Image 1 (spheres, rainbow, N blue to C red):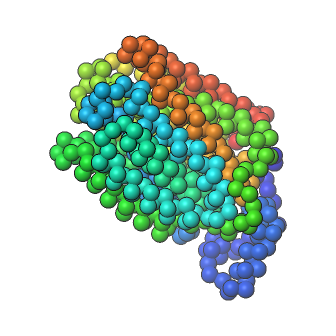
Image 2: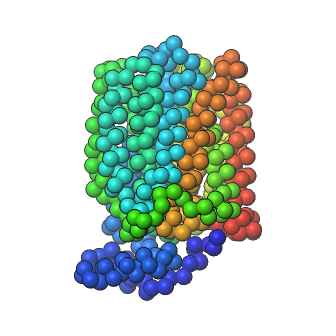
Image 3: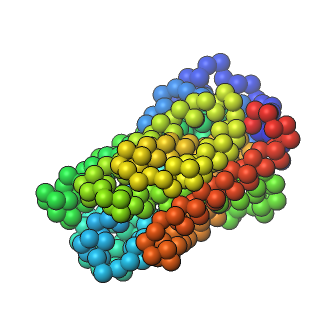
Length: 445
């Protein structure tokens, strides 16, 4: 399909950024809204504020929601705790199903939540998602059996994360075009911050006040963050006609750049969460104390904060695909060249920070890449389709890595090899997607 960056405006752009969202008389507002909807996506392309109060408040609120979602990348802390306490009789690959199901539900729900966003806007998803997150967190605090953790922490919390995740990024995409990657990067850095803070909180509180109250206190923290997010996240695009179907158009699956990028993303996502899930247990196998292993998970997510912001800033200048493909390749090289030989605590910390940086860039760049090759009115749907397909990768990744670990009788070399190869293959597919947009390998895409 055509390059959205070249779309030409049909209506006259507002005289200032503030004009694009300042209050106007009812009759004028209604006429403008009707005209914008009737004229289609090209009409809407010209009007991105790329800044202003509503736009940056949406970024702030999205970051607040994503701090809550940061526990996704901190599941290694729960994996280690469960293996020593509530679920000590189960294997690592079995326990990892809790985190994998959580990720799968988050990703798979996108195909429906993205379309609901396009039709109804963000708050019809965000408010129920906040309620489900708080309830599932409180119930997790009293779980003791494997099936209970699967249902509550896996299924329910995963759905809640999805209901916060997709409306945030789709809303940001309606406010920004030129600086979209930067805005998304700042927001998604919230998940990295959550991934740093929550493991430290749990490390300090698990041994002091117990598992139950530690998780409940994190729920109260998320309550405050959800209130902030619901008060500030908005979408610039008016809701579409409710007659539109909630399933994506078939044209989505015939768009060559989108399909190729989705395939590359699938390979990368299969591997991406393996280190964050197993890095704590890996460090224990190298003689690191359980107390220090929690901080390795935080180091992984601290690197992710830099990876989510700095490459996003750079990508607005050099191209989103030009950042994404090398980041995937370098993440694979790190697994093969550094993690394989990480036998001491300093080397493990270096790997965790660097891997977190490159994979943080991958997570931050997915949505800007998709929105760059999509019509604005289909952004929510396209994001949802991408993540729903990727959901099967994140579902299988953790247990597959655990199975390889079990086959190796506790040796991590096979799992690390799998992780590195998948990253490199995924980077090749993402590069191919870029070349299907513009065949010049040096082009800014």
